[in-house]
Image (cartoon, rainbow, N blue to C red; front, top):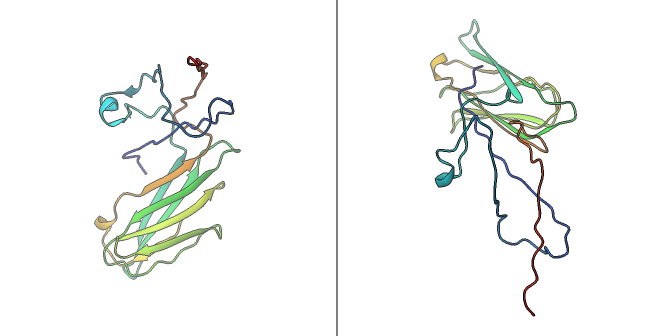
Length: 184
């Protein structure tokens, strides 16, 4: 498949064990930061959106779709999901949505792991495939229906990667300023 759109959402979580910083206060105030040269900051001040001209690295998953029509007129869709992450990394909450033709009535599936599930959602005209954790190279459910190829839309994939930045961005240092005691 060809990557049509990529959205990257992220956050920085910092645990502070200093006695003067108790509880959760206001948001962290950032005095200074710099971004990669591929980042466009057009909408950052207004909407807090960073846009990339090109992704700095290859996305961590690749999808290989295949669609065939069998002799009975059914549409057979095969989807293979390949994980391109370092061996010690794991993705969680992996969800794939496969738009299917409105006439789709049933789903037959072959999943590699018992913690995966695929479900046909006729209201949404889509197959929702849940692969809650991805550490191997799973292959997808074949979906069969008698339908038109034009009604099969782009596949969407969402996932979470813990302790991994697919952009290559890293926090190099974090400087904490001591709190000045006020007058007694």
